Length: 305
Image (cartoon, rainbow, N blue to C red; front, side):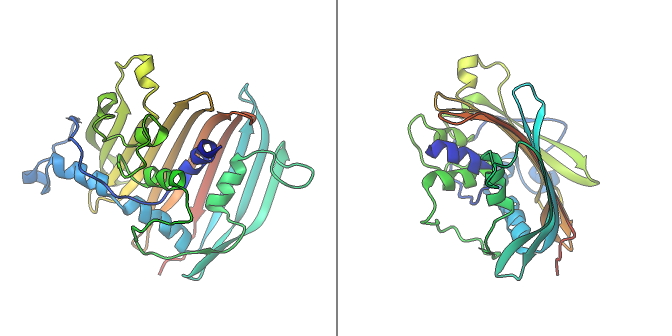
């Protein structure tokens, strides 16, 4: 049961605290990283990646600043046919100390709600908890590294991997999920390729850092890599994460999952903010019905000083 909620919580996230690990082999693709040209080396670049807090701060901005939101959640059957749709439009309000959401419109079609008005599925509950909380929530822009004692280790680990890449500040349960989240860990490096390249993204020059499972791995080795791919675009001007893509696959007798998350960031009056979030995934937990879902969220009209 704990693992089930751990998987759902991967879409939320919190902290970063990196430790030293053996430097993996990094492939350079169409880009030169050198002290002479950029002021830092490949080793420096990896350090920036591991210690990045810009993605985390971007999501703190999401809660800290008022904005409008529009979302769509689709539930699919095993044939890939939509059997339920939930659309929301509303406003995320914040006074700098607390925040709350107000739905201007909610549209539900198909198998979304029970007769008592509650959701038929756990996926919409998870997204409501992350993006549309029912009650007020505390907000701030502090970057404290103190652990929230009210959160489980599983929740803290999920938040850690969601906002950072390859940190090993996760609970090292032997052979468990947590160990598999640290893609820079010495024991996990054998499963991944690490590539640096560059691109133009929304008229911004960016470094691209990709962590991806090695293509030549045997099936039984691939199964040991929960994170199949992480793609990050770093704005060359300030090293902010401007785009990120995660792909998770996990097969276990308690739960099977295959999910992918895309996050697009931008700037509003100099503040780094999430503007588009897309999720598509499948999970099947023991004692629960399988769920296949797609979620889209657009955030606009941020009120940023």
